[in-house]
Length: 219
Image 1: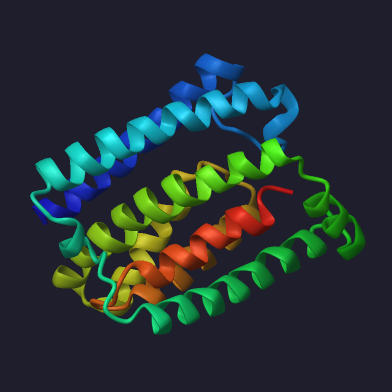
Image 2 (image 1 turned 180 degrees about the horizontal axis):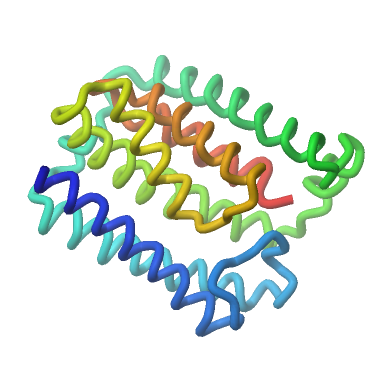
């Protein structure tokens, strides 16, 4: 139970970091639906600061230090890279399909407008999305949610309930209470949790999660 509470505490700490950085830089508690409406410099500043704090505080201090776990213990193993990358790509395809379906059903995009939105990203925006993909999504969030929290929950309540619970916590951390967003983020959490399983490498969910940001971004 101590590990579960520790993991939830780190989730709350990260949510507060996102809120404080957003309020301090662009006057909003979250990056929002239109990330770049305040200009790419503001977003780049938030992403850069969050990356440093994510890796330094959440991962290095919170997980590796206070959590007394190694990167390998979190699930960062590379013994079956080919299989894990293939699983990650399959997971990305499934998650992307859910996201695209949600955007179409809610009327936020048509297929042509979604394609144009993704194709219209500037090089700067693509680089920012890539940084989010590598550091925020793949490294820190997968280490925290699927590596640490899901593992602690599995020991206590079993694998299937652990996947559901960590997916709910992952969903709520993003602080977007719109029904469509809640459903999509919940599905993401479940897909990434299944890719991780009981003790598979974090590479598969990290590839799936990272590709969502790197390829689709926030249209």
